[in-house]
Image 1: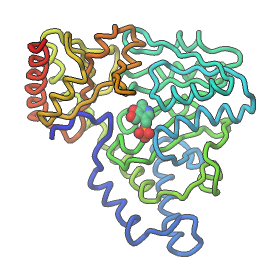
Image 2: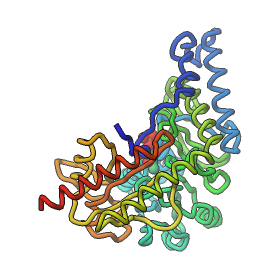
Image 3: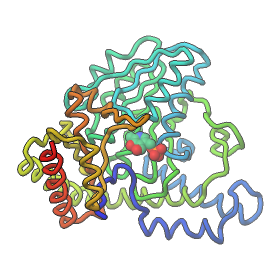
Length: 376
Ligand code: PLP
């Protein structure tokens, strides 16, 4: 299989697996247990938190473990609203956020919150001006992600962070696609979320960084884990794996970036030059891994299917509900028409890809597009 879907998930790095294995076998104690077995696990959780904090450039007590990026986004948004203790207020979220944030905002609408969805420009960028316009006197929360998962477009989060700080608005930055690739905007936001399975770590584990002093309530009630803010037995192996994966990703970021970017750029140049009616979506500065391309006269789902049959794994930004395919909310919000959005395919490259794989994927893509067009 040629895997070009690294933005969806990544395989576990073998060194990360090695670091995790002892905590799934002999050192299996519950970190909350009082005995030696428990203490061994508790020490590993402390060490993982310390390592992640060092990489983030924050204090260990600003790091909270979660089940991933979805929980991090839910906790940030709903936790801030809960801390306000009011049933009314205003939330501003970018229209290109992941459903983890968009759906959380819609949940709060049901409780009486008003929500503004901040629209991107045609390149897929949320401008500071658009954020400034959306924020009101009663805005309690704003979310603008670090880079978009469909287009890879990097957002001006430092400027956005500065203006939100001035307005006294809690700023959540979803960094799920950028952890281990870009330096994280700690110091520019109130909270940020990452997810281990996006940087060759274990699935089902993430981190919510919360700036000390930020006003936020817990989402999950239970035991005293995570300083009483997130109940549930700590996942020692995953915490160790997340810290190891982040360390490896950060230490090899420069080399990976150069390799992945070269593969992606060569692939995109070839697609645009050799496949007629191919259009790159999103502009400005992008992550090195992402290429979101629309193909005139094609349905993205059909391209995905024909690539899958040839052993190439990609994705579309479309959502499938009740048997109907709805085009990507991200591409639509950028002002692209429905047919352009429906014909989009996302190719995301990763550290295990090779030039030979990119060549084979290109040939499979050319075949798929020609077959779909000739069938019409
Ligand atoms: N945010 C973004 C930008 C994502 O790309 C994803 C996953 O694709 C998530 C949040 C959700 O993360 P998780 O799969 O860890 O719940």
